[in-house]
Length: 636
Ligand code: MSP
Image 1 (cartoon, rainbow, N blue to C red):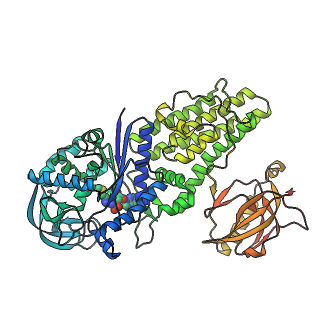
Image 2 (cartoon, rainbow, N blue to C red):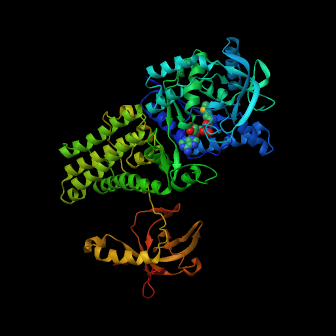
Image 3 (cartoon, rainbow, N blue to C red):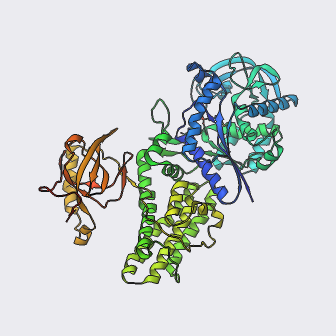
């Protein structure tokens, strides 16, 4: 059994968690779930960074005690991780007693061994990054990391002899190609190490900053927040507390970070570990940034994406899927609601949701639900199975190479192949022609591929894949092991149950177009309108419906939510008629609706159908019937 210990950076407790924090944590969670599923002994650590000037300032601004402020704000992270289904084994807070003790013991030990010394210091300090810089580090007199103003500071401080490890570190990075990934980040670190490395100032005088861990050998100082924070990776797994636990987990297999905290992790941390005589983590992986509108997210630009809003809008699993599928770890990715909706609708609603819904319905129609046994496999069945086998292999490689987006993409390719397979084998025609054995083989093969898709995507979308499994009579526990994926599965006594669409399509409210443009578009589309057959038309079920209630939808100025009576059946639909009808004028009207339209979600509200209306320019008139007629009558 292999071991897998994964960490995230510990987040500053005074920030509101945003999509960047959510990304690292979901990435770590998916890696941890995959490794558990491969049977690896897995530990996943995350937490919060609670000391330092930023937290002290934030607490002072609120007139609060530092720890009370942390206790209150840490909950934002803990709640978000719960919502996102994060399966961390431990949540560490740097204000916890055990961590404070470990940091103090490390400091004392390094001090006793002469690795830490006291000296007078003159330098430039960036409050935002909580880091000191020398005159030559500055760029145009500003912080080289974030470009903010720096303060000139002269004081006595304690220093860690980081410089003496410079040659060792260069050599270690060069001889361990997996140590800092992607490789271009290792080169970036080597570039940084071309300049002489300074010793690291690891103290702050209490007169300037009191919120930190007190130095055990000088009560007038607290520990520099980064020195304290980095030690969480070892204190969180028993260092200096429980030798057995520590030996089980350390060194970490994968430390995930964002590219902006590369130097602290690729220079400070390894040299600290070297001085402590501890082995290095196997890999420090720096991912890119989430941008919005191709710009860095910032409060002042007002473009910060709040994960809670996205979860409310699209659900947890779709959000997790998007984060993982859209970003190629290592590179930056751009977030926009349009990219989100496009990916959701194409990958999840169209490809995966559609495949499940077709296999589910066809099986229920053919056998009443029982997943049938397969007869002799034909070439097309074997080719389809080969697609998912290759996706499974790609997923495993992509895990090792931290290219999860490629693994996910391979699974989605197999799903698309599934929809093509159904078109080609046409099980509906096989049923009509009474070719039962062939029909059963096709349905069995499609169900088997869907099962493997569910196993492979479970770490990314645990709840949705459990629902997918359940629709095929498979319990969530049976989806847990990628290691057993290619061994035969016992399909006896598995029954498909009717299910609601797993991923209802998201229909965005259309933006108002300029009238001139609209006229032009109308002219163009009419000659291109394809003709349909009477069979095509008969697939659309139109019915009369009585409007029972109507109400506006907050923040959606064009939409109304309507409750309808379809002759004993109640339906809720969302319609873009708010500009033409006041809600109260609609009650009691008999209108015409498309009754067999797939469910959709508009602005977070479910819609089970569509009403008909005629449109002329901006004017909109509902289609009604000529005289009294009951609700629920078929129109045709
Ligand atoms: N507290 C330090 C880390 C100490 S680890 C021993 C810290 N905290 S942070 O809250 O500011 O940032 C945490 C992580 O979020 C960093 O890895 C950072 O790269 C990441 N992100 C912050 N904004 C981001 C994006 N817009 N996109 C992706 N990740 C980004 O730094």
